Length: 298
Image 1 (cartoon, rainbow, N blue to C red):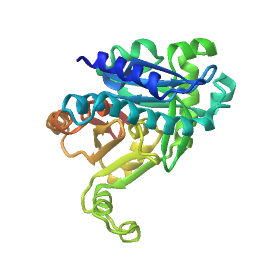
Image 2: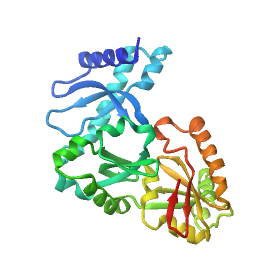
Image 3: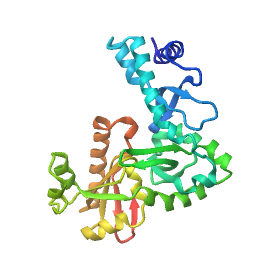
Image 4: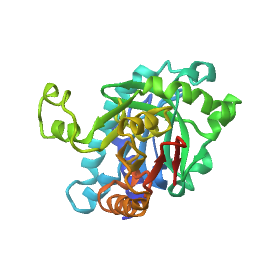
């Protein structure tokens, strides 16, 4: 059974056994970051902007390995859809009008080369070997970040331009998602379970910094924040290397010799291939920040 056939059969089973009259259950294949295709089941209410979706790719593997029957998959997917739909009720009065969304428009960074198909349907701005795309923030809290992607269809309905999206996102993103800069030593100490008060005052012996935003989601976008890299370069009294560990975070280290950039890029590429989820890869390139020129160089 192909994944597409599995998707359709699970959807049909949910419609037959689980769905209720005021909800429509649909399915589709969705383009995600890095041209990753996800197979999802969607819960729709008429005239509502937000439609909860559960992806079934992992369920398909469980089905093939006989860990779950089709009926068990359908029941679990429906339970998850019901949970997500209940959460989504808070957005039923969400307005997608441009004037209501202006202060919630943010940017995020993705790979330019890995998103050839994805970028065909969204407004974007090239940056180095990356692309700046735009979202509407529905909610940003300690629990995570909930956004809606701005597509060409949305920008056409709004009758605005990519230039205007850039202007608004430059104002909104640092405000909604402030940058975080931690020494890598501090991050590692937290990871092994030391209390916050034992790590907050420690100075790192490792000249390495982890950059992200307060949500920890799409934190690599802090690369675009004014003065973040300049401040770190001044603090280290050095040029910088920027290692894109994922779309969510960056590792920054003082640069000794610029000729190390190629070796660092090889290291980043190897880590991406072997340790980073395909959907979360940002770039295989280690970037060089020139302190004097205040400029990132490929």
